Length: 208
Image (cartoon, rainbow, N blue to C red):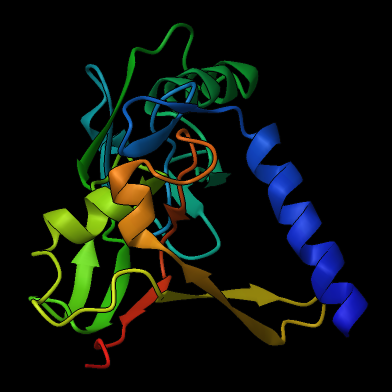
């Protein structure tokens, strides 16, 4: 299991590189090709002059939505524009419409949270902006209310959960020196620790 966790961590790192995430600012990571549809997003899909084909639907966990005349359609991990194009192609391929004008819009984004506890001013869930894949821990803690006066900023614990092939949860805890990161005093001034959805941040109190 130990070796599997190591492999999982390496795979996770490769996955992030493969996703071509770009650093839009010093605080956030975003996908190079823009926002991609996720489970929980609310979609509005319409075809001009074909009101019977208009739907409003929340994307389920499996990512499959149901469209008039063409049935099930996988929407997750696609941009709204790409989904428009694929829906159009499907209607043409099945001979339902000759040249449909498809509009897809995300009317409400799914909420993704990280969780803060310990010596922070605002404990509990913190919602990541919808277009963001990850946030720098320094900016995230600042935006969520900051540390208390007795926070041990140089020893913050971040717990992230990985999953085995069998679906078993494997939590891993990282120790992060947020104080040094915020001052840029690490060995590499470009070092950042990225926080992803569902991460748990715990800030212990200082020992006097």
